[in-house]
Image (cartoon, rainbow, N blue to C red; front, side, top):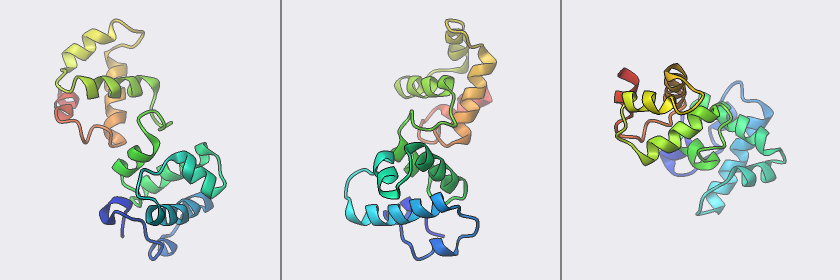
Length: 150
């Protein structure tokens, strides 16, 4: 099955054969196939929502479903929705992501110490890290694997 980033575009050829796509996910596939062939720049959730005649929230949710079905990659999803557009992530996870991008070599001990400066404890930081890993946000951060094992 072809995904959005394997080919650099999104083709309609196979998507009609994919079982269990809801109407929003189908519309996202149609919109992505059209926009990726027409636009050379970045596609936004607002673009997808407008072309698909749905809200940004519906578009984001449908994109998340396509990621879960491995039709759209985590990386393509992140590029479309940005760091703060993924409603599966808590504000703790979103803030931690920004921090990790700025300080990629931080240790778990340092994060635990920093968590004392907020209302979150070390467990909340670990849960946020696990969510970031689960949803593919840590894949591009070089030292992130060490954080989850320490």
